[in-house]
Each structure stands twice: as structure tokens, then as C-alpha cells.
Length: 219
Image (cartoon, rainbow, N blue to C red):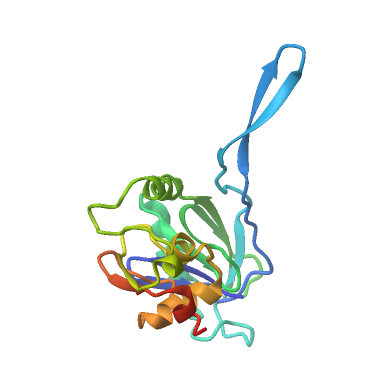
């Protein structure tokens, strides 16, 4: 497992994989009081993650358990993370080997040195970006006349389709829209089919091809 942040073409992988991470998916529940029935619970919109901070180690020296290509300089990571925290734009948050690939705000970066080694222990507090779901709901209900992105199930269409990437897109979300599935198998295959080296790094304005599912998976 690796944990990575991406913004404006800059990819930052944490130098040491944290012992764990927290994420949550759910819905806000609305309580309605009905006479003679009491409280009734009704699901509302999807809730957004704002949970425990991500605890990580930023080493000041080389350790055998560091990620390949990691920099033994805590300030290198702190400079980037604190700059992103100070900005008013989201960053992409990815946990490899999981379905976590989403936009978040870095709410804060707290850090400390505690053992005299120069290593820094950081707590990165994340809040899930709130606009992505609204945009996906809009796309699901309104034809995308501006970009020419018309969502049709790729297999039922029986032919390849073109899609122009817009801000906030991910390959997993595109796979969910066209194939109804968004696992790593699908978005990695779509990246390979379109010659995209990093499936987590795509750019608005790029037009990709959406093949039928049987072609995508080589079946």
C-alpha cells in the first residue's frame, strides 16, 4: 500500500507507509418526528469524510522501510503539504490497493520532532471535497452538450466512444459511468488502452477512447 497526493501535475508519495488510515462512506440521516409513530429516519445525501487525521513519519535519514525514491528530508514534504493546505484548491488523495481515489482538502498539517533523530511525525487532517458528487449527479441527468460527452453503456453501444476529460474526473469515475464498475482492473485497463502511464494522473481537455467492455478486458 502507498499513500499519494497529486496536485497540478505534482505527485507526492509519503516516504513511509502509515500503519493505518481512516476513511468513511455513508449517508446523512434525517430524523422526522411523526405523530403517533415517533421518530422516523430517512436517508439524505451522501456524507463526506472528515475523520481522524493521517499519521505519518517523515524521516530525516535513510531507513530500509522507506518507499523507493523517498527523500530523507522532512522539510521537503512539509513545504509541499503546507503549501497545499494553505491553498483554496483540493488535491487528489490516493491509497493504492483500495478504491480510495478522490479529491480532498488538506485542512491542516501538524508536525513535531520528538526523539532527537530529526525525524518528523506529522498529522495530516483531510476533508473530502464536496463538489464532486453534485457534478456527477448533474452529468448523470443532463446531456453534456458542451464537451460532447454522452454517457452510454459501452457494451450496449457495441462500439468505441470518445470522452473528453473535464476537471474533477478520475478514470475510476469514468469507468463507473460507462461500465458500471470502477475497480482497479477497469481503470488500469482503460489507462493502458489509451496509453496513459499513470491512471491517477489525467488532464482536462484530453480526449480518450471508451471501448466496449469485452475489448477493454481483452475478452
